[in-house]
Structures are given as structure tokens and as C-alpha cells.
Length: 317
Image (cartoon, rainbow, N blue to C red):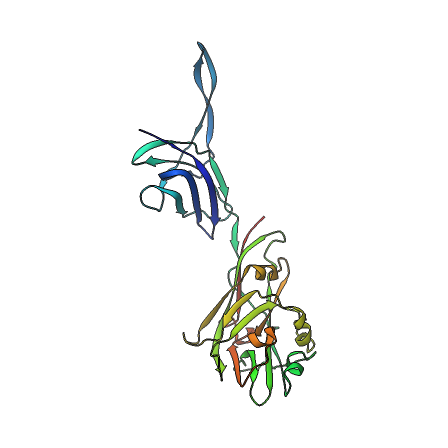
């Protein structure tokens, strides 16, 4: 005997050219999504009500549609589809029907319409303003809290790698790297959903323990090009946007830093996104013991092939 299927929730999650749909129903069922890029057609069908023929029975018709079976086997409460060929600025329409125990059952599904607003910047290369600022003194507080840093020159050729980290060798050392990215292509009222930074790693310097302390990405407080006082001005910004480690166990190639939710606020649509990479001891203001931990990577001066890149995913207005 046929039952009834009620849709209690539906969530659309877009990506570059696909949309993932997840539906919750009131009873376990096996669903099919009937999907079409064509708007449903509406017409009236004659109905006889108390002996009168009336054109009041409204019908919605799908054309050029396909039925897509849910990903999960058997009857479920949660139903998932990953629909391909659904690019940016494309609208599709769908309704849901299904089976309970292999018996086709009545669905109370309305017609859903979804417009894919997902966009991505692709990998935006950092500019030529990338610089490392560092400071080294015999006293930790005088090193970390110094109002000015020393701007490290960029050598040509080959390009000089920059270092980010902190530690103690003969003296205390703090190394901060400032990056900037042109994010003008992102619309002013876009909703940022994801961002990540990729670095081309040259190597690392690790002495003492622990082996792999963290590298933090914070919002940059800097001039373009950077000036010596950017080193001290950066102390006011401690919100952690992303966390990575100094770890060369996988070889020196690419390090991927996925932004946390607070870090998405660092992205500046219609402007320049500024980032500062800092070592764990630096950001947390922990006096290092004996040992120096830093990550070496190529800045933009190394050329487009190895420049840091920032990728931003967003929903366009």
C-alpha cells in the first residue's frame, strides 16, 4: 500500500559547476529528483465539481526533465544528490517523488527552484609588495614587541625566500611575512564561503623541540609597500584566520592553509586583502626555549610559478 512522503527540509550547496542537494523526509523512503532547466508550465484542467465543468484544476508540467536517483541505497531519512552541469548563474527546477519499501508513494513535495550563485577567484597571485620583517635581540620582549622591524631585501637572481617563525639561537628572533592580494574582482556585497592560501615551500629551519609548532595567518596591518613600523603595528591584530604547521615530512612543495570562519572576514571585496603570517611563539607571546622554528617559502618575487596564491569562493549577489 502506498504511503505518503513529506519533505521536511532541503539544503542546496553550490560549487563551481555542480550543486549538492540534501533532503530530509518524515519517513524512510527512496527518492528521485525530477530536474529540469525549463520553468514548469502551468495550465488548467477541466474538473467537474457538483455537476459543473470548471477550469479550476491547476496542473504544473515539467518538460525536458531527468529523474536522478538519490546517492544513498535503500530507504533513508536523509537523501543526497550531486547534480553536475549546474554552472554559475543557472537556474534549475525540481520536485521529489519516491518509493517506500519499493512501492511508489505520494509525495507532498512542492516545486523547488535554485539559482547557482557560486563563483571562485581561482588562485590569485600575491603582488610584488611581499616582504619579510624581522627583529633579533637578546631580550624576548624587546624582540617581539619592537615597534620597528628590519625589511629583508629580495635578491635577484635567484629570489630570496622569506621566513616566518620565531625562536632563540644566539639571540631571540621573530620573523613576520606580509602578503597582499588584489581581490577587486569580488563583488562588494558577495558572501564569502571559503578561502585558502597556497605557499610553495622551499624548506624549514627546525632546531630544538617541539618539532612542528604552528604558523598562523592573521589580518595584515601594513602599508604598500611595507615600512619598518608595520612590524610593531601588527601586534594589534591577533585574530587567527588560519593555522598550519612547520612540517617538511611530506616534502617541500605546496602547503595549503584553509581559512577558519573568522579568517573569511579578512577578505576585502573590491579592494586589497592583506595578510600577515606569524609564528606560534610570536602570536601567543611565549618565550621560546633554545631552538628556532621557521618556514621558508617563495614570495611573489620568485615569479608567477611559485608566488603565494589566495583562492576565494563566494556567492555573487
